[in-house]
Image 1: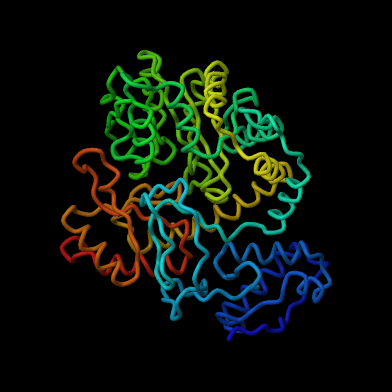
Image 2: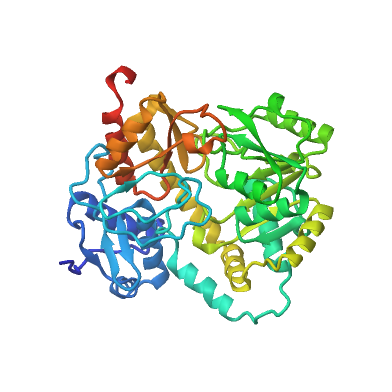
Length: 473
């Protein structure tokens, strides 16, 4: 049985350390030393604020920081608990002794791992790629955003480009986060990357056209292009990204993930970016740049987006699927004005639209800086999970400088048995093989660390390390 406990906390208003940080530090120390134990229920934010005589925002911010770090767990309507899988920072190799609590099921939209994703059974470690951590957001900010959405009058004639206010805010976000010099007139609000890619395909492709997709690459892109009647052309990649010299000259569209190639993990270097854009100008192709997890990078400086280098030949796709969660259902498409107008006309014919209330809620998150604060928290947390992977599997890891997944390279004959045995021990894994059109060129595990806690990431990687044959160690 879970019980609520009293907390021996105090705040010092004369101290320069923010009150929320003081509260979070004291709670973290209590969990680290065992004064707070796994499964114990904490007071509500309202009760904690009353206890400390601080604003509820202070209590909420402290809890949200600990949620993001994996110390706390909770479900809607049932309270806040010390996470069963929380580990002391001083003991990074210690394995959890209790099974993690069951997580709420997530919708399978836009996943880059398995085509159909079911919620994992309780006690399993899900290291499949394509899922962010959806438990670390600021609940107060989320509720505030939806209250503002409730004030929005329903629109009988939705704008195919999206709400003007949100387009302005997204343009500003892209200028700050990705150094993309773009105005609102070049931004369309979509329902996510898949929706944006389908709108481009519906506008530019059809029978008799050829569309390039990275090999290996995102399977949904292949399906979208094929369903729009195009011939799908596999375009090989190496550890840096798409190989420009291997591109044919008759592609109408090329889909690429230059910030963090999926699934290999490469970052397309500047010389190759320039070479790719020169190819696009020479052949007349449109490059579709999927920036799906570019907000998360580690130990490296950001590389300029392709769109910023040549706005005339590049369409930039982005999404909140990885930064907030796939259930939000919002993304953006940035394109030259003429192409954007053609996409908007096609979108109207398809009766496709993005939810107005969702747009209003996201606009509030951007306007108040809540999304930026969330991204800063999650960059820190994801960096720690990535470090846990590198500590255990370092020699096998590729593509760990950005994003929410890494590539663990292994011989082809090792992978199937390892995945099966890991599954028997409760660790769910994806492999690189299904992301190919033809015979697999890249072998290994596509290891996601977005949806698993830091303790589970470490535990799952320890299982993988044990299962790698001694000859490959």
